[in-house]
Image 1 (tube, rainbow, N blue to C red):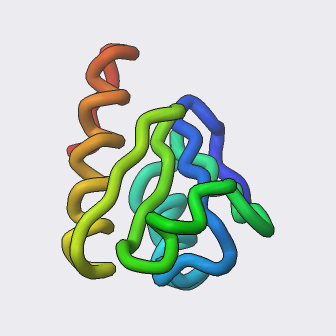
Image 2: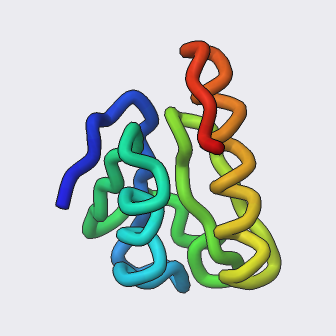
Amino acid sequence: MMGAGLVLVEVCDSNRLNTEATDLLETRFPEVAVLHSDCLSHCTLCRVRAYAFVNGRRVYAKNVTECLESIEQEIRMELKKYGLSSD
């Protein structure tokens, strides 16, 4: 499934963030498109942290749960720029 794409979340396939968790973002936020890539060329970070890019901004955390929370927070901030609410 691919969202509207006002907010783009890019995830490396080798990263700790799994497809199921990130695809739920598209369900929760219809304005989001999640793009899974073979490699985002941040291998050092990818090995030690869960991370993604949200509209080009790197978001990372110590674990998957915290990273998803940070990604959702970043999505909400991006949606506010467009005058949209996630609630």
